[in-house]
Structures are given as structure tokens and as C-alpha cells.
Amino acid sequence: MSRFGIMLCLVLLLTLAAPAAAQDDTTPEPPPVTTDDLADAINRAQQAAIEAERAAQDSRLSRDEAANSVSLASDLFGLFEAMSVVIGLVVPILAVIAGLLGFRRLESAQNELVEARERFERDVEQKRIELDALREQLEQTAKLQTAQLSASVKEQRETSGRASLALSLLPMGERQYRAQDYTGALDTYQRALDFDPNNPIIHYRMGYVYTQSGELNKAAQFLTRALELDPGLTAAMAARGYVYRRMGDKMTPNVERDLTYNKAEQNLLSALETSPKLMDEDSESWWGSLGGLYRRRGQTDQAINAYERATEVTPYSSYPFSNLALLYMQTQNREGMLKTYRRVEQLAFGEIQGEANNYWAHADFITARLALGKYDRIDEIVEMGLEAAPSDSPYTLESLIDTLMRLSDVIEEDKVLQVLNVIERIRAYKEAKQVARGGQASAD
Image 1 (cartoon, rainbow, N blue to C red):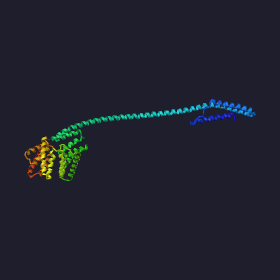
Image 2 (tube, rainbow, N blue to C red):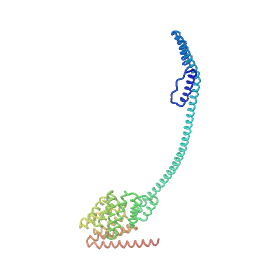
Image 3 (cartoon, rainbow, N blue to C red):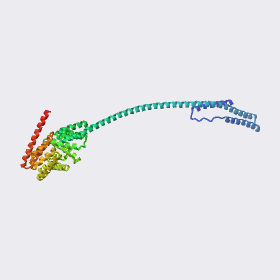
């Protein structure tokens, strides 16, 4: 191959290798050809030429062989010269290509950085908008909660103030009830209820007063409402049981009355099971009301047991002893009856001395005196008892008449006439009061 051909092949190979290296970023580049490498190649060529000449002389080679060796050396020398020229051209080209590739990579990285920054700025702006919306929502919520809290505090203050006013009226209502002014007590409790309509105690008090005034349906409504507001209010439960018993008393003997009595027993027993020493607003044990229920049913033994429980709760009250005395007589225990009535007389007299307008003490005192046959000053004693009777409660006089009628059934015949005379006097007084009350109502 001629020198020119060899040089041309080398140039073509180097030219084709450059694009391939540019396209494949992963292929490692060949080490660069340095000036020292070229000088070393030239020296070796020259040394080969000298050795060739020496060999020709020493070995007495033919002139042609020597000429060929010299020619080969010259060709190699020329080849290296050509390679140095080519390499001098290729190296700058490769540098330019590498520079172009590096610029493209840098430009691509810059573009990616710009896009990332734009995405980051968009995300930051979106988050800022979301945070602004959240902050505005929180501010509105805080304002709303503050307004609600202020309104709640204001309402609580107003409610507390109304409740305080309602409670301040309760003592007045109690004093009016003690003075047997049932109408005044109901008016006062109604005013209290206007201030505090969900107060169970006020509902209970109104129900109790309505019971004593004989308005049993209203009494049941208020007592039921009290229990709705406070299911554990045993006083209201017992009072409702007493109302049911009173309702049953007005019914003719039938299934409906039995059911009403059953409701009365259930309420009274539930209250007394929870609070065995529970007393009503007249300071009497609710065991007495349960005893009255059993007596009306004809359950004498249960009635005696209930009244005896009442005497344990209120040992200084004449009420349970007076009822026990009649029950003893019904069981043919005359001695027990007289003994008990003597105690009733003492207790009732003491109660009257302590509270002159205690109607129930007057009623027990009248009954005891008649049962014991003590008729001296009986008219005066009856008159004092009638004057102590609440004008707004016809039931109180009816209760005394019922007790005296039961007494007339069990005492000696020589005492019956005196008892019946007292009964007639009480009835006459009751009718006169009703007429007077009706005339007053017409005048109003």
C-alpha cells in the first residue's frame, strides 16, 4: 500500500470514529495523543532506518532489499508525519464537538432548572392562596365562635338572673301555703315559674298546692312535669302517688279505680324505697298516705304496718297515731285504740300550742276527744278547728267528716250521737263557706 493510501485510511477511520463518540455518551473516549508520543514514534522510525542500513551492510544484502527497507522506513516516517498532521486537525474538531455536547447538556439543565423553578413558584402561589383562604376561614370561624360565646354568656347570665329571681320567690310561696293561702301561694309559684319554666322544684310545689286545693288533674300535670325534668325527684313521685290515690277515692269501685290505686301504690313505694324517711310539705311521712291507700283497699295489716312506719319517721305527729287508733278498733283491739287516742290527744294539743292554725292537729284533737268521750268544751274545740280550716281547700273538711264517720262505726253506741252532731255541724259550716265563696265569685 502506498503512503498516500495509508494516510487516507487513517484519516477516514478517525473521521468516522468522531461522530460515533459524539453519539454515544456512555463510550469512554481514547486517551489523547501527546507530542512526546509522536517524537517517540519518529525516533523509533529513524532507528529502524539506521538498523536497516546496518543490516544491509553487515549481511551484504542485495541492493533491492536494502532499498525496500529504506523505503519502508521512509514510508513509516511519512506515515507518522501524516498522522501528526491528522491528529493536529482531529483534536481541535473533537474539542469543538465536546464543547457543543457540553453546551447542549448545560442548556438542557438550564431549561430543566427554569421549569422546576416555575413549577415551584406556581406551587408556592397555590399554597399561598390556600393559606389565605384558610386564614380567612379561621378568622370568620373565630369571629362566629366569639359571637356565639358572647351570646351564650349573656344568655347564661340572663338565665342565672331569672333563676335567682325564681328561687327568691319560693320562700314567699311557702309562707303563703303555711298560712293556708293556697291562692296566693299558687300565684307566687306561677310568677317563679315564669322566670324559670324548667325548674322541677317549682312544678312540684305547684302540684302539691293544687293537690291540697282539690284540683287533682292540674296537680297531676305539674307533678308529672316535675318528674320529666328530674326523674329522681322522689318528693314529686310520692306526691303524684297521693294524687292518684285521691283520684281513686272519687271513683266507683271498678277496674279503672283499681288501676288508679295501683299507680298510686307504685309511685309511693318507689319514692319510699329510695327515701324511707321522706316527708311532705306538711312535715308528715308519706308512709301515712300509703297506709291510707291500703286501708281503702281493705288491706288492714298492710295499712297498720305503713302507719307504724310513719310513726317512726314522725314520732311527735298525731296524724299516724290517729289512723292507727281506728285500725286497732277495726281489729277488735279496743284497748289499743283507747291507748293510742290518749297519745293522739296529747300530741295534737302540743301541736296546736306550737302552731295555732295547724288544721290537721285540730282535726286529730277533735277526733281523739270524741273517741275518749271527753265532751267538755267540745263545741269550742270544734269551732277552733273550723276556723283553722283552709278556706281554699274543701278537701280538708271532707277528710275530717270521713274520719268521724269511720269513728262512729266502731265506738260505743252512747258516743255515736255526739259524733254525728259534730259531723252535722262541720257539714253546715262547709256549705256556708261554699255559699260565701260562690257569692264572692259572683261579686268579682
